[in-house]
Image 1 (cartoon, rainbow, N blue to C red):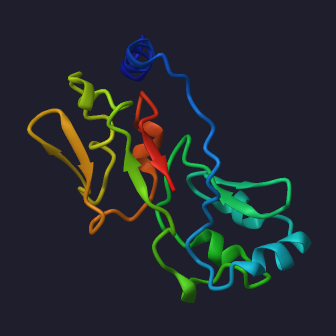
Image 2: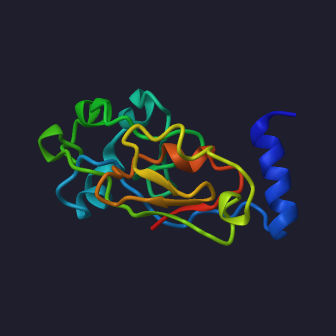
Length: 161
C-alpha cells in the first residue's frame, strides 16, 4: 500500500466521505475574453489539450478546454497558448489561473491531528504554510492556483472555487 492510498483510506474512515466531483470550471490562464471559448473552440481540433505537458487540459462536451487538477497541475509552460490557432488562448494574455484554492479543515488530515504534508511538498511557491505541526493554510499572496497540491491531497480536502 502506498502512502497516498493509506492516507485516503484513513481519511475516508475518519470523515466517512468519498471523493467529490469538482464542479468548478477552470480555464487555462491565457485568455482575455471568456466568451471566445464558446464562439471559437467549436471550430478547433483541441491542440491545446494535446500539447499540454501535464495533460490537465480536457475538452468538455461543449468543446471548450478546462483544467482538471485531479492528476497534476499547471506549469504555465505556454504550450496551450502557442497551439491555439483561433486566438482564444494567447501568450500576451498570460495571467494567474482564475481560481481560489482552499483547504477544508474538516476534511484535511493534518487539521484532524494526522501528520500529513502531501500538499506542501509539491507547492513550488511555498504557498502552503503550517501553523504548528497540524494546521496548513494557503497564503493567497503566494499561491498561483497551479493545482499541484490538489491531486496530492489524499483526503480531497483541497478545493478550487
